[in-house]
Length: 282
Ligand code: C2E
Ligand code: CA
Ligand code: CA
Ligand code: CA
Image (cartoon, rainbow, N blue to C red):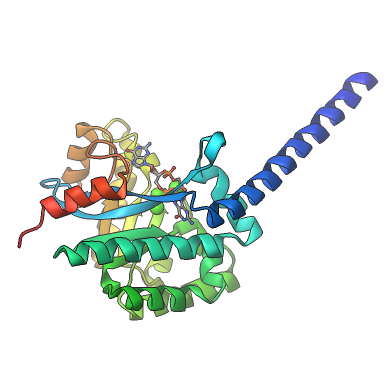
């Protein structure tokens, strides 16, 4: 029994060591990625459920780590947050979004929105709003073409913290930036809380959508979210739509916008540009 205990401890410490090594490795890699242009910002189409017409895109970060291949944002975003690197990484994301929008504007399209994911730490740094505003102005991009996604969870992360995040979101909104609450339904926010909160869009988390028309409970949650958002004058977008069954049940409950593999995977800027410029009306 004693021996077993010892080997368990050994196993535990070596696990910790492996985790620590991976963390340090990723931290170093992230600095390198920033300096050597290893990031790519891909764009996943968002569309009307009614006719699948394009309304905008969600920007998603990709890291092409050379010989290590692709590293998932699920792995590197938490490291970027812990090390503070999320601030320069996030600024790179904003500058890319502005570049993309400027490029489309030069081709006569200025009504397509891009949503970007923002970590609460970026907002708490206190510099995000100015950085975004000055980059948009420098690129001649209208601020109402930019949407900021913050997770429901991040908004509930401590009362004082929430105050700071919420203040920054109010400032963004005053500039005309749209605010979307991401992964909605996975946190524990109350209706009352949502009413006080400055948001324009609610994103139904894909964990509810993936059950779709199959599980009654999930569809009841979706219905409640849609009803509530509508009564507050918010738009609703469902993420992770993969099947036509999910599409039609979301339409039935009155959800108007969607995103997911059914219509499109995230696209490179070139591919997304083809979509945007094709749909151009002038
Ligand atoms: P998220 O914001 O919830 O993004 C949605 C994720 O679902 C994306 O994963 C997307 O590629 C994936 N997805 C899209 N359509 C479907 C579908 O039909 N089915 C399924 N199963 N999945 C779908 P991705 O790109 O790996 O991003 C993972 C997470 O990393 C994001 O979750 C977001 O929290 C974070 N992230 C990505 N880019 C950024 C960024 O620029 N900044 C920050 N702070 N976080 C980011
Ligand atoms: Ca998102
Ligand atoms: Ca999401
Ligand atoms: Ca998520």
